[in-house]
Length: 306
Image 1 (cartoon, rainbow, N blue to C red):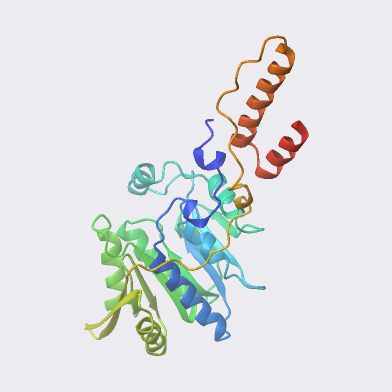
Image 2 (cartoon, one colour; image 1 turned 90 degrees about the vertical axis):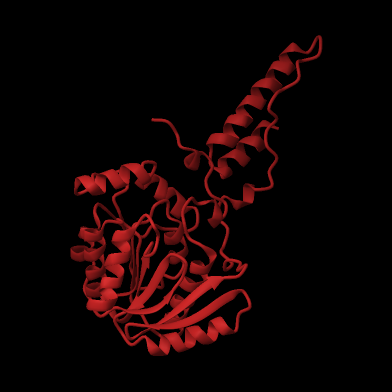
């Protein structure tokens, strides 16, 4: 099996991980999770649909002692139906569990609890009323999103927060219909919307929204608008040159400043054939080490060869 580029060059920063997680949503994830933690709200974390792990890596930093963080994805497994299989083949053909786990472990000492399979697994694998934060970014098909939202409602604590991705993308009408159906008919209250995500709760939205509006008004990098629709207050946020929250670099970041091995070795001078061949061999080994070995082994090999 060919080695993927992501495996050869592990991420040094969160931005190196492929995926869609804008800085505005990074700020909002931090704000909602920090607010829960500052208010003494405990509970488990859940992400349904992880792709290469970008948002999962970010969320994992908020798991506290005694809490469980569960992620679920098909990865390279079989989809439950033909429509889901076609969607996975088209958009997520490169995704493997190994690649997700390698990316995650670049930033964390241990993996979350990983469920490999369709999102329908989650309902029976995660305890009811156990989660404080659920991020749904899995199938874009209406039937699956409808069920995922129902699962989130069953698993969330009374004031827990659900985040629904791609609720207004032109290529995901099924997500839009399922999301607004939940708002209009299934008791979900919107807390705010970003460019692609809706943040909601089945609890009382007013205290959270008041704090959120005050926070947004205090920032000069966040555009705020508030509208009323169908009896709901809709808080809309948009980035104005916002920078993402500080996030620790990965365990590979220490190699960022190391020089690359030379692409070619000059021919040996006359009378030094043996030494020249040795240098050439060492140059080839160094190039292979930079490309294939973990950074710690690469540095050790370089020291041994000098």
